[in-house]
Image 1 (cartoon, rainbow, N blue to C red):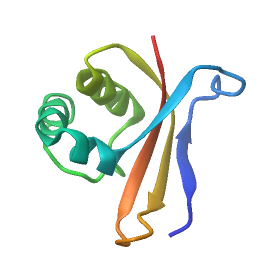
Image 2 (tube, rainbow, N blue to C red; image 1 turned 90 degrees about the vertical axis):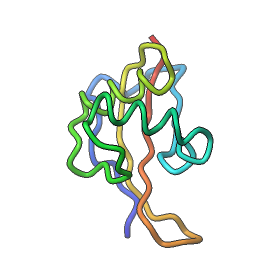
Image 3 (cartoon, helix red, strand yellow; image 1 turned 120 degrees about the horizontal axis):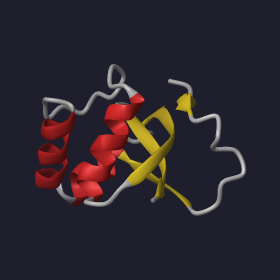
Length: 94
């Protein structure tokens, strides 16, 4: 699987104070928080983000972090050790 951005906010270029969080690390860090945020914003507790629209991802991140964030990009790549897909969410705190 090739690393690629699957979505980018056109206004992202040149922004400062951005962060990236990986979907698998969110689960490892706090699976209960992940599942609660995902259920309340996407309607399930899954780990696949291919069919989730960027506004839903932004709402999920805000729910997970319990603060408003602005989604700037979504990056999909393969976990090198295990071979499964993971998603990186580039965001800024608002």
